[in-house]
Length: 84
Image (tube, rainbow, N blue to C red; front, side, top):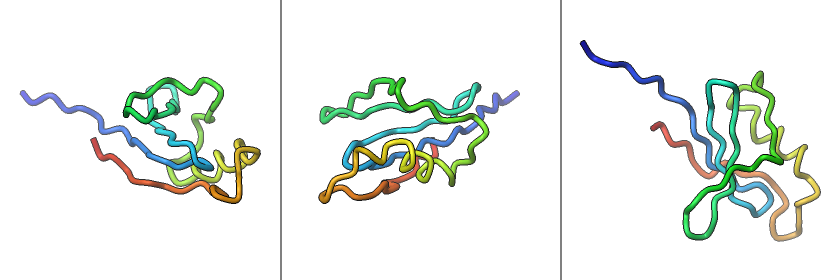
């Protein structure tokens, strides 16, 4: 019998110049800061409502973190989606 693992979305975003990874969890969404070395740490200050859909995450983070915006980094950009 094959075990079926649920595929949970992983979003990689540039949030006004800060690399953020957002992953769907059983309880909703978990955000992580990604360091220059590729290591990630939980971003407890970025609380994402579990009711948000994947396509709404970028806009939500733009509203939440707008004070991070600079002339060099004026927007939130989706970098990629990791299907694993």
